[in-house]
Length: 239
Image (cartoon, rainbow, N blue to C red):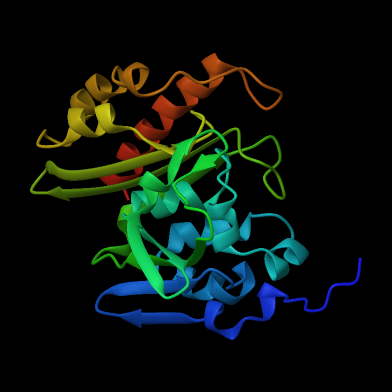
């Protein structure tokens, strides 16, 4: 078949822009991991480490965060971190744009909130006053160039020993990247103590029902997810 016009979207300059304004970082859907990695690492050091483990250098040179999101995989590396940060997705159809919380984009396995003709234009990420607050943990059989069995990302605000706000998101625990809302509720407004964390760990069963597959068993995933919360608590309590 003769194609009269071929457009390589990786060369669309408007989709390859990175901008910081008003306390937000805007990442165009065509920005490669390689191009954005240093910016991510500067604003969110742990997210930067997560990106360093994403595929090989050749993959990061060609792959994009926008593609990782639009693909809708439940085990994509970037969505759990972006959701934990409260990122928004900019969707565009012609000159019409709409913004939605990234977590609302993932409706079910293989199904995203994208109307016919819409495409992902950009991801907008709020910047943190304390970049160390975000922690990203990726569990794999190999450290490098492997797909996550479980990926947990945590963004908790603790003031005067009390957890005032919690955003926790996991990949590999459900059919989509998913927030642990029952766990968040069990932590919010409570003393940031080992006892509170232990009680919150019981809420994981209300948030997730993971599956067995070639990467991990359901029981391993559940136990690992709980222990990542404990790991976050210990690291944040004893830096």
